[in-house]
Image 1: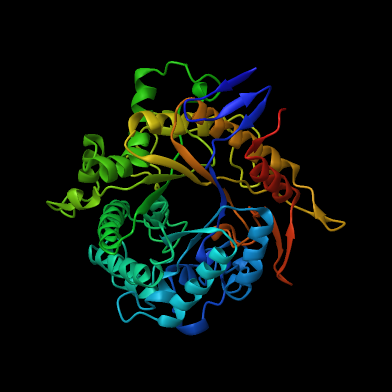
Image 2 (image 1 turned 90 degrees about the vertical axis):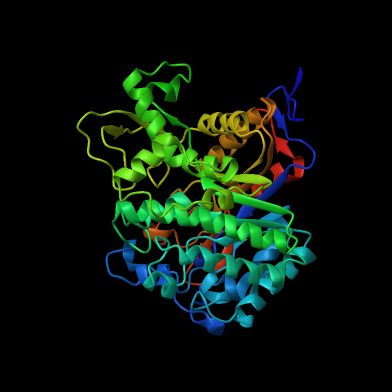
Length: 474
């Protein structure tokens, strides 16, 4: 029996076929893979400074070398071609393009991305360029960073410069990657660069990141860009009972906790970017944590620029319940009396619970609540403790993880969600932020001592998925 969804996805005896034109790809980020931190005029970013500070990153690791993609990019593109990728999502390093954040454009920095784009196009792979994946020039942080309004304007200047050089060949542009992480892990609890712990600064940073998104979108449009995306780390916010039973009815107190956290994680960004307004619940939190003076008249009109897609980075659900007396989590200003709960589920090496149906719930919810925009899964993947044995990496856990999550995407498509593609995180094992090199997310194994690349079993499986445009029956 064949069941066909309204978007063209179909299921035949357990086989999951994806719609014609569905985009299959992989994603990376500049500081995590490029290395070459002092090459060709690049200057330090906040992650160079943070990683170079003792105690901030596991093992004292830094991104100084990483995967040396700056030197091995042509080989890496050949790997992508061998896998049959349709698209490659990479990020541009702001400190390579405008090393001090504000001054003259560095042509040598842009030359690298121009060479990369040309290689991708020669291989028939569509480049998806992300303008900001967390590597703010350190000089801008020294001037106050994202809590300062001027950073948003400097970001638009940088976006304009990158588009002027690459816009003749790059059609797909992302402004920001995960502004929640930049704001609340960078300035709220300090576990990411720049390592500040100030709830009011985190909320200001979130607003200025959104303002930067709007200003950069205007700059990209003025240059002729046609496909623009805002990428968010999103998750269904649910109660413990709803992990196993989506229909479970929360108590009024639990429902309020869910709504408050969803406001901070989801609606803070999507209501602003797609509707031009902040939720009232968010404004109350901001007012209690430093006030509203940084939100100026006209800001949300600037933020609310038309975009083609929202990118979803999904790893696990956010599970909460009412917790009277709980102090606010430093990453969640305004989360007083909310308890963040563990999930009874298998976990990855990061300790993150594996809940694939959370992705289908999320995609269907976004399609229902924000039907004006298309969706693309821009990151999804898992870290496991991979071992090379006889020249192979038998990462069955990762293959199972990806299979389950792709079936969740397929279920969302069948339910009518406008999901246009899936980009696995990550192409390569890399510098995993505060976790250093001890956590491996790649479908391609990297020996960091030799820079040798090795396709894991998950990569070979993914190649067949792409070739088939779907999943085999169970």
